[in-house]
Each structure stands twice: as structure tokens, then as C-alpha cells.
Image: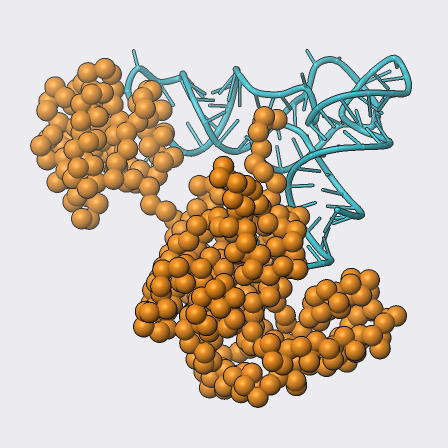
Length: 421
RNA sequence: GUGGAUGUGGCCUAACGGUUAAGGCACCUGUCUGUGGAACAGGAGAUUGCGGGUUCGAAUCCCGUCAUCCACCCCA
């Protein structure tokens, strides 16, 4: 048994998994750039207060799941449990409100939540995050959704389902919550224990309860989309008109809610099958009140976060083919003390000429060729005493096994030709 | 935080409560003194997660603990 093991809920992303991650990251970056989103990187830790404010006291994320610590200056800090609060803080702090609107930002990186790990849920996980700031109209909501769409589409995902709802705004949501609570009071004895707690602490959450006894109560519950104020209703209708006009499939889901306080109006998720209970691969929505809540100028905004570990799970579950990462095509083999230094010099010359090469660490010729094969070399350069005495090296094609002598001065040229440069 | 399942070399798996915990993959070496992929042979690698208990005897049974996986909760 190893003396040390990785912390619970963390993962080592091994070389064999890197092709999935590289492909995902480049797909995300390409799509984001193509849609006009610019990259922003914010710190992995911020003041605890920022998240308490931004994400919301009373949410599980803030109350139970943050990695918090005091730094040596006695400041309360927290590893980021999500991206949006930090991005909005950066937007305010750097005066980005003076930039031409919309301000479209994306980031990728790790986030941290102290939870019980399970399929698709980790304590350190990676998110892709996108935000559009400064636009109140539903076209921004659409743009953000289209980015998610295009990413999942270019990844080749099958059976994607977009779930859509509105959670209203501070003007209309309180009335809805009251109606919901009244409905639940009327069915007080029929609901599960969790819902009895939720209906006061986090009332919208009763809507996505999975307990069988709660299903009839949910089905007969009032729908928020019937109780939206004029402005929210119109916003929602316009967004749906865009989606309908584009023939983008989506499911109206009046049970879809968000666990973070800052959401207003639009909420959406993307679901994928076959990766366990944690099937939401992307979740987001509008958060018009957040910037002001964090002490900045009133700034309407909309965005989403996507869990990259879950996306990798989907890629594997759906058999998505990802390009192999290239290994150096050239492998330098050497025989004996006299040839070793020469082989190293040759290696450096090749690299300076822009040719990707690596050198054998020694052993019998047989062992060195075996390594060359296992490392996926296309061409092996054999540098031995015989070759050196003749002023040449032996070039072995690992595909055909064919060997040709090459004059030392011609090596770079010969390799370029063989590799099709 | 709650519940269930599972812990045997790096990975996968075997071993009726009974010798020195067996095999496969991978790794290293040799057959091949300067030629990869195949075959064959050999080598290295495990106080059976940890701690107690039952027993003449525990990988195996019991208790505890830790870890992993899955689910709840919550969320990406």
C-alpha cells in the first residue's frame, strides 16, 4: 500500500486520459473564441465573503461545502466553489463596465466543494464557464445557450436534452414561493421529510424531489411560468421564440430550479444519459442582480458552467473518438561510450532544427529498439562506432524495417524528407 | 451529513478456515555478444487497506476504522 494517497474526491488525470482532456479543452477554447468570448482567469481562491455574498448564505455550497482557511494575514479565504462570483468581482474591480457591451468572457479551471464523492461528482473538479455581461435582453441568453450547444455538438454528443425554465425575478418570485408553500401546507402529510424541510429553507427545491410520494404533489403544484411578472414573461417568450425559430430542441421543465441565490429569469441545463445520477453536464441562467449585490454597477448578465469531468464521462460512455497526442517521431539510439556523446549532440541538432526527437537511455540495441517501438517512434537513428567511423548514421524506418545509411551532414534533410516536411 | 456495496503485487483476477498467497496483463533480462513487433525461458514486484477479536490455524469468520465505488442530500 502506498504511504500517501490522493485526497478524497480528487483525481489524478493520467497520461492515458489526457487525450480526452486536451480535445475537450481545445474544443471549448475554439468554440468560445469563434463565438466572440474572451478568456479570463481569476484566482482559485478569493475572500470567503465574496462567495458568501455572491453564491448566497443559506445555500449548501456556502454553508457546508466550501474549503475555507485563514491566510497568514488572518484573512478569511475560500477555494472557489464556482466561477461566476470571481468573474463578476473581476469585472467590477477592473472597471470592465466601460468596455463595449456585451462583455463576453469564458474561463476553465478547477473548482472545489466539500461533498461526498460519487459518479460525476468530485471535491476538486473542473469547469468550463461562460458569461455575457451588460445585456438585459434574451438575445444574450440565447447566445450563451448557443455556445453550449455548439460545444456539445462538436464533441459529437448524442441525445442531448436542453431543459429550460424561468425562475422569475425579485418582483414575481416571492408571490410564487408563497403559492408553492401554501400548496405544500395543504398536502402537509403526504410529502417526504426532506421536502418538509425544503419548503421553508429552499422552497423551489421541492420541485426536483425524487421521492415517489412527492410526485403527485409536484404535479399539482402551481407553475412559476404561470405567475411571472410582465417583464419576465415577455423575456421568457422572446427567448423561446428564438429557440423555436432556430429549431433548437428544448424541453420546458417547470421543475428546473437552481441552487444558487443569484439566478433570475432564465435557467437552463443540459442533460446527458449514461453517466449516473449526476446527469447535468451544464447548468446556467441569468443573474441580473449579482453585480450590484457585489457592490458594482447594476449589470444584467447571463452565463453557464459546465462540469468537465462529467463531459469526459459522457465522451467515454458515448465512445467519442479523440485524436491521439503526438509523440516524437524520431528516436536516437546509441551503442557504446564513444557514440553516446555524439548521439546527444545529434539530438540537440535535431531539436534546434525543429524536429521532435528523444534519445534512448541506453541498454542493448535490442532493448533500445524495443523502447523506440513502444514509444511510437516512426524513425530510429542508430549511432554506433561502425557508423561514426564511416561518418554516417543508420536511419531505420520502424514501419518497414528498412535501413539506410545517411551521411552525418545530411541527417536533418533526410529526416525532413521522410517525415514529409 | 445518511445509506448500500467492495477492499489480494502497478492493473485484472484465483485460493473448501489448513504447507512458502496462485495466474494473466504490464515491466526488466535472456534465447538474439549490433537490430523492435512474435514465441519461449527467467527475474523483480504482496507484512491480502489498517487495528483488534474468534480459532491450534484467518486473505477467508466477527467488531471497529479508513479508503474506493454507487445512491440520497446537493450540484457542474
